[in-house]
Amino acid sequence: MGVQRRRVAIAVAPNGGRKTRADHPGLPMTADDLARAAAECLEAGAAMLHLHVRDSDGAHLLDAEAYRAAISAICRTVGDRLVVQITSESLGKYAPAEQMAVVLATNPEAASLALRELAPEAGDEKPFADFLVRLKRMRIWPQIILYSPEEAARLADMHRRGVVPFDSVAVLYVLGRFTLLRTAAPADLLPFLAPGAPRFAHWSVCAFGRREAACVTAGALLGGHARVGFENNLTLPSGERADSNADLVAAVARALADLGFVSEDADGLRAEAEPLLR
Image 1 (cartoon, helix red, strand yellow):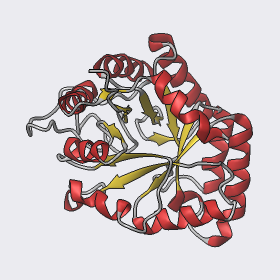
Image 2 (spheres, helix red, strand yellow):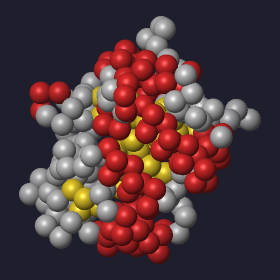
Image 3 (cartoon, one colour):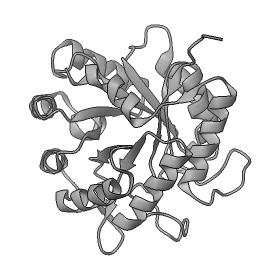
């Protein structure tokens, strides 16, 4: 009694940019679909929604107007009880300048930024640094997506050199890849946390494939936050196909509760993010 349990934020990535309703009939595609998924996932324990939008043909889209429409629909449904984070992911369709421009034009609460897409080479660091300065001024919370320990080391070096102008950095470690041959396992997290690896003030884990819940639960045990959802996985820990994104959120929330964790809410996540905006 009297011992405060650690709080873990669960983010949900309900659709991504690749899957269609051929993959799952419940995949949210429209703004109204996303608003319904947001309400369900909030009830299941989510604190953040990682947002992708689609064009009229269902293809991946980076467009400020479409983002604003989806965010408006979500906020009409859940208010400010979820942090809404937009993606800047290219999927091979957009140049870095376009990716950064859509974030600035949308002016969201939060945005995810893949280091390998926005600053793949040393020569890309200056425009990326200028972009981050603008995010800081606009108080948009960036989360840097990292696919390998080498990327993590490079980001830490960029932070030391002032390329990343924030006092602290939020990152997302991605385990596995979008292919059955690279289904993630909890051990995939260990190289990111090995002795000598950089330590970031706020880190989360997402994982491709059926071991998603195991991977993010392992991340929570080691000090991180979690991201789940149809973008990366359609399968419950039991091996059964999930009916909804909310089922995936609820499964992880239950696993974390059984281990003594509390699911963080959006306001708590915002409080934790506040130092990351400095």
